[in-house]
Image: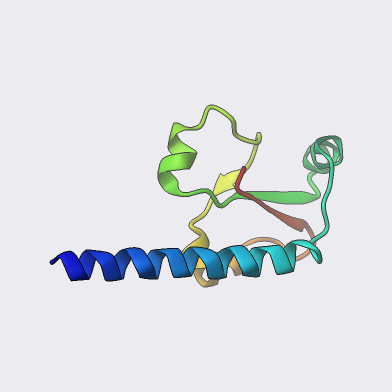
Length: 94
C-alpha cells in the first residue's frame, strides 16, 4: 500500500510538471485582455466566458465573472462545440 501511494504521488507530481510546462509554453501564444476589455465584450454580448476552475474551487469562490459559466476542463470535447462560433471564447481559472 505504501508503494502504491508513493507511485500515485510521483505520477501526480509528474502530471503537474507536464501541465505547468505545457501551460507556460501556450501562455506566450494566448491573447490576453484587461478586465475593462472583457467587461465591454460581455456588455456587448460578443463573448462567452467559461470558468474552468475545479468544481470545488468554483463553488467556494466568492469571486466569479458575471455571466460566466462553469465547465469541467477535462471534458472540453463534450462542451466546446456548444458555444457560438461568432463570439470569442474566454477561459479563465483565476
